[in-house]
Image (tube, rainbow, N blue to C red):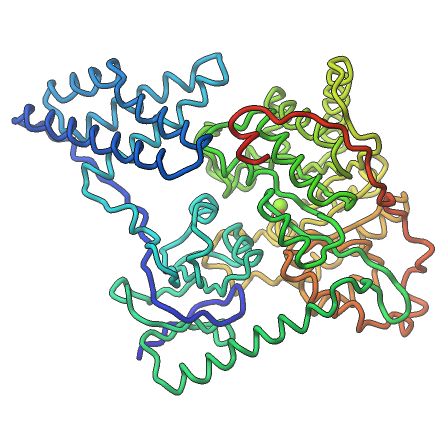
Length: 573
Ligand code: PEP
Ligand code: MG
């Protein structure tokens, strides 16, 4: 038996085989080749093979989705693309080099086109380039995750690698790198996969071996001894029983012993999470990270595609309040088709609302989609990474411009959309009084607030020791933001990971927090905590419930039909 230590991100036990997950990175030899005919043959057979793969995929999926793969297969017949690659080979280069150069040039050409549809084809060409390289390098990509349930072991996972995983085959996740506040860690928490990061010593030769990931002891046992198998299988069964017991809290109010009511909302990433919100009896959605709609798409999602995704969530959860955060792309959430360019300090760089305010058409597409979707549920719109009042004002002006346009187009929209901002920068927390005059609600993004207050890169694997999630400076900013919000009748929630920290629940309630938005799996345990709290012992300190700002009551919206259009409309719709 071998034991490898890591840092636990999600508790729990996973039992099964290990699968080493390796994203291929290709180094392309730039030396000239002598046998160009052989290279042309290699290029041709790779092209035919990828075409066959695309056609086979088209047969496996629904009629609508098949269109993507059929279009890919057709692109590989494009004479210009084929000729440009062959010319590169004829000038003495390898097939791999020709594919990289030829396909990159075609992708660049698409990305510079005026027409949105053609611009979006750039990502398809890049996808095809990767498939061509996989074939030329002889990589078996199907086996990346494998086709049986496994504990995945990876060097690190980007958010886009993670969203692509087949969740039904994932028992647990172990990375050699990673940090506890990264978006991959957040995704792991929301899916409740037992997860370890910084398990530096685990080696590739564990591939295929039987193992137990023990979140409680922050380690993974490879080829464990029988006593451990028995002990940890029993623990896993106990966990399942405890989870079943928590179900008894479904339908119960989230209220303290002395009658203080807090809203327990869920954090989600898209329409597929609606089921988890209902299953865990969340009272609403406090954070829909809309950037996952962008990350899940190969191309910049159109207004109709986004509308379909938002509508599905709003409709599925009506009359609950659903707060959709506008696109928070950038930093660790990078997307090729956004062409954001490299930055030395991406977390401090061009991200979130900064991109939206600089790329007005991009922003308006999302705001129009949100406004149209608001006809189908109870929507709140939230702007991320705010530092100044003018940013909020400009966001609201653009929103109003979209509203007027849609009105003129005769499109249905909801009436009372609450507007809020994330408080996730020290600047916003310290200016909370001023910002509260602009909005209906605040939501404290404690992940970034901690990163920016403590100067701790949330992505860094080396800072775990210094990353004090209960740092007094962060707690002070949280408390002061709640107080500032309440001075202006602005309600205040917490949607960062700290909201689910059971050791802070009582403190947050004492400070008068109005809403806690957490991953769906944390809703019922948190409700259990809330119901055990008695704030009457803090009589003089705690806020009077009647002093709490009112959150918009849940009103069943008048639902007006609007037909989803396009491929993504059907996919999400
Ligand atoms: C946060 O920063 O706390 C937050 C909720 O946003 P994200 O984790 O998506 O950056
Ligand atoms: Mg954030």
